[in-house]
Image 1 (cartoon, rainbow, N blue to C red):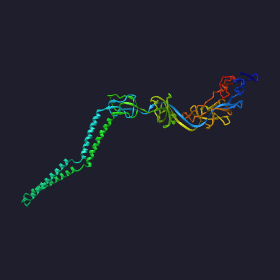
Image 2: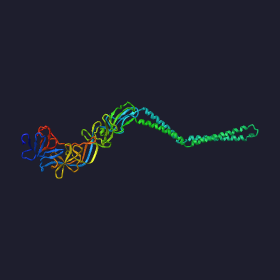
Image 3: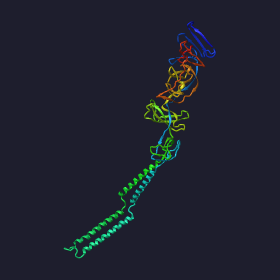
Image 4: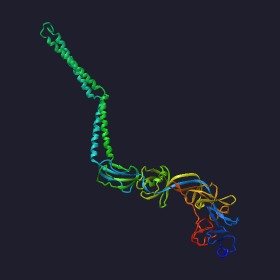
Length: 504
């Protein structure tokens, strides 16, 4: 039914009555709007419509006994975690280009492209005949030096001792013969008398004795030397020669060991350029080995760099939704990219799931803040009235009141707020019909999670705030729109706003 009644005669206004349901439901869902021509003001009378002014509800002709059905949830004390999200590329944590340590010819290649190899596996073998010749020469030098040292350390040989002793015996015989000749010369008749002409001959036997005595002394010294053990002065240079020869041999062996190229860590052969028979040098590239462990490289803007530090917790997720894994910030590049004004940050997972493949994209969320004891409410409980975030709180007498809050971290389902205490019952559904002081009947109580993980941008916490469309009030599936005739601006029986161009 739709009746119109003119008020105040000509030039007056019209009273337009729209009935929700049948005429028998008087007082339930009835809205009477008086539009004063030219006044530019609309008044809502009766029903459950409310006019908002400066962010507050004012009742217009309500029935105090009316009760509105609502759904509520209890504000809880929990953890609010802020995150920064980035897109990055999965890369191998280790990647090395392998070159030979020595020059040589490629004798064999033991791996194929794409092969997964364990640490220590043989990759390539080289052949170098020059090194083999040098090794043989070094080994011969070691053997010679060791033989000399061993001979000296063993002491005098029996043959040398026998020769030395024979020389001593020979010198003794010569001395005895010289002494006998000297005695005979002294006792001969006429020898040594005054005026004798043979005095010069007496000196010859004496000289022979002296020479024989000196020869015996030398032979005895040589024999003692031949029989004595080797001294430290004799052994030291021989030992030094052995050590020098051994070092030369070890150096050649080390070079030969580099002819066998092995994997420095477990990984995947990502490139292979070694060819059998090819001559290579230490400047040549044999292959590239990527480590089995992976990480995600993300660019971080300079404005966000202060929120990202090594050791902070993170989560790596696949863009395709195939999984997620806990991670940590490993490194932050000390210098940035001057063109993009970003810094490279490495995120390492605590485990390596199979869906983290080098070269593919991944999403990273880095924890930048954590607040314990935050007050959490369902996001639907936070409404915006003239730009002011508020919640309806249910009092013990089953009436409601509006509380100004400041939203913080939000994941779209749960929001951390300040200005409200834990344990408060907040309206999550049915706010459209409420004004402060209204009585309510709770039809359902929802639970509130004890943790919220939301995003932060440039260090500012973000939280979406629900807003009711302007110019509409929903009641029993009936929408009532109020506007000033011809004014092009609207008012609402619910919240301040307008839907221009609609007449009352």
